[in-house]
Image (cartoon, rainbow, N blue to C red; front, side, top):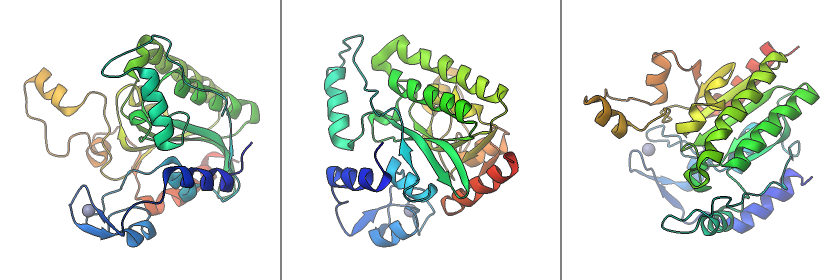
Amino acid sequence: MPRLKDTLSRLRRKRGIPDGVWTKCPSCEEIVYSKELEAKLKVCPKCNYHFRLTWQERLEQLVEPDSFQQIDTELLPTDPLNFVDLKNYSDRLKEAQEKTGLQEAIVTGIGNIGPHRVVIGIMDFSFLGGSMGSVVGEKITRALELAMREKLPVVMVCASGGARMQEGILSLMQMAKTSAAVGKLHEAGLPYITVLTDPTTGGVSASFAYLGDIIIAEPKALIGFAGPRVIEKTIGQKLPEGFQRAEFVYKHGLLDIVVKRKDLKDTLIKILNLLTK
Ligand SMILES: [Zn+2]
């Protein structure tokens, strides 16, 4: 199993060093000094916008250095339907793999968060919008099964546009499969904590993301099932300000806590302290 440090340096080489000394915030459009942005865990110092993170950035922020061991790295996506839209799905997969250095939209493994050994899954939105194909569903299910065998809690960091349409029904089936696995974890009495980051939508929100014993979200993260435009057209009404943002969702009782990125690790440790012996 590859060690974290090796994996990270390999991926950094593959992805290249981020361009430019300055970064434009997509929320307030201010120009931010990239080093300051990095120091603030990629949270805009001007408007508090939480930038989307790659899985390795998230891992570095949450998991103890050198404690992470990836699992199920041999699982690779295929194109079972020979799906073609504007491009072949197989070409889309290849491009996403080359662009991100990832094999799929999630990385799973075992690592330490503070003193707690946990099974952890981290989705990466940069791989085909974090969409859930068969391999994503299978990796999540296997991670949950590993947690049951090892009697470990699970932390699942979600970032996804939903099911992967290029895999059709096979993708939708992952909702049932992952939900069943969460159900078994629950029966085994093991904690399952989900972290909903920007965005967590569609079939992912409607399955393993919203099944957490404790559901955490990052500030202003877009969280929902259907997009706001679809809902507005369906119900023929204008939606309220901030609809589907973490704070709105929290206010309506669908989240347990909205946590700033700088406090996320400590919050996870506190929750794990409470839920484990
Ligand atoms: Zn900003």
